[in-house]
Length: 522
Image 1 (tube, rainbow, N blue to C red):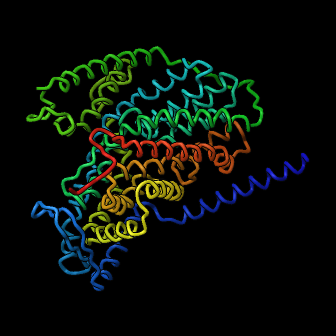
Image 2: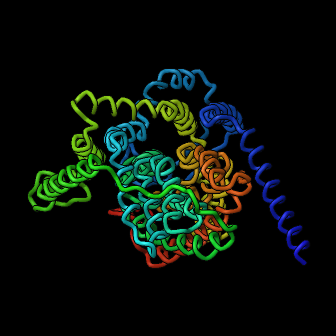
Image 3: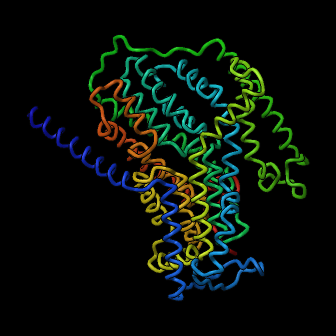
């Protein structure tokens, strides 16, 4: 019986490895995301030529930006190979890039995040919380910190994932369970957070451009998914904790704890830095409250006194940047990392230089989006798709759930979240708007699917790094070992998140401030 069990386990692992190898081969065969947009732009040009020659058009009831009224509109495919179209394309290349909404907001907020991360402020917070964590709460804290770390982009992968293993060992628990819990929080909970992160303005920008294909005045705010993602933080923390303690850890082989490293508390300089940062955050928050709470404050709407459509909301990206920048600077001063203004600017320069690949990606994504919109193919696809889905009765919750699962599947092969949304938003946002679903709803559905399968996507940039962390504690561990360990998280995150979404949808709760579930032209 023992031999039979061993044989079955070998076959199971063999299947996982073979499946993983297939995913890796398909993923590696795909071009670079930037190249993918070049190919999509060329396909758009060719498709526009064919559709225009065939006389493809659609008629729908929509917002006419010229008359400012809702009326019946007929849109025909525009031939991008026509002389006038070629002239338009070559003269708008620069403006397509510079006007791409995601570009400015990401650059602005990364100035603050770069300083907070570069001084070591984010890492010190993670280490301090981990060092004072009681034994009973270790799993909860590791998963929760993993989720929270994504406000500073890749900090969680580099700092918290290995720290999770060390923390578990300090309590005589298997280090790989700590690695798995941290990786699940950082990567599987990528879209959840109690705060607004760097991804929120990027997604909002792309969603806004897609929504304006239907309504030129529509704007998706960076805080559009905040309520849902706030609650999602607790959901993913609970699910991640249960999966770690009930499924992952019991399946791991015994570990020899002798001679392994322990968790060290932060240094005296780091403690001073955190104290300085804490005071600066408190002062900043008090000042912001004084500027926002009074009904006649300068950051409220000058006529209505409201907050949703106010200078405060319009400047939210700048205020978010300051929320990272100010404590980052004061932490650096307290920890003796920052000695003068040149150090601060140097950290900003370093953070911006890390966006070089993002800039290249956005340049080509902007051209594809502009070509796609100008050709009217996006409108034609969204109208035709919406009409078809409505005719077969495939709308509402079933449609959104299928969209979440589709996104989760695509994420295994295209791991760059911004690239996927740049491709999917111009199609699905206007299509779902025609079916009465808001851009904010489509965006949050995409983010659920995008997060859940990060931890089993071998092409995800930090997956290989995680494999290396696993191998530190298990020399025989490989990609198959990591995928089999992380698969339960992926499955239960997807199930749990869809369940939360269904409840949210049925209750009709807003996804964020001023962000409804449904959309209506009227």
